[in-house]
Length: 157
Image 1 (cartoon, rainbow, N blue to C red):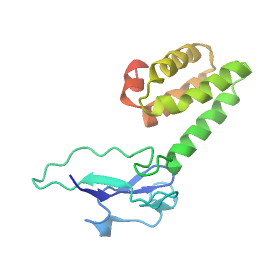
Image 2: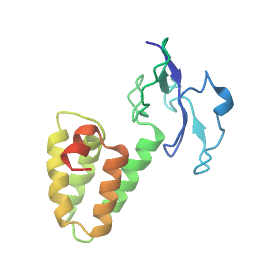
Image 3: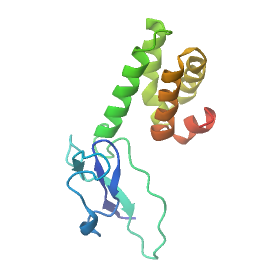
Image 4: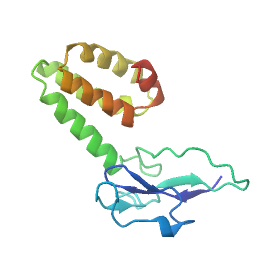
């Protein structure tokens, strides 16, 4: 089934999942945060996959992609989420260097379901018991906003 092109701001706010079908709804800058909006992958220039263009009028929920389907690189909102969550983890005084590195390295497996996702979930559960309240809330919000369904379900978010 063909897809329209999505317009998403660099911070990850969906502006228009039908940017070609309904161009009047497009924004050069996000009305929620002021960030630049994009319709193409910054690495390979492939259109960001938008909503299905269906024949029967049924519209499914749109889920913004985390990675480009053409080149596999992360979109800007994915990079920002991973980087900012990693920075939050590094600032937690209750974690040792090994724990910090382990958590940061597992963040991509929380976003997408991979063979390593269950291990990442187990490590995240363990970490949530030992991190400070602010770090725990930041990780929780990261999982809610960017986590794959398996991670959300397994972590109770």
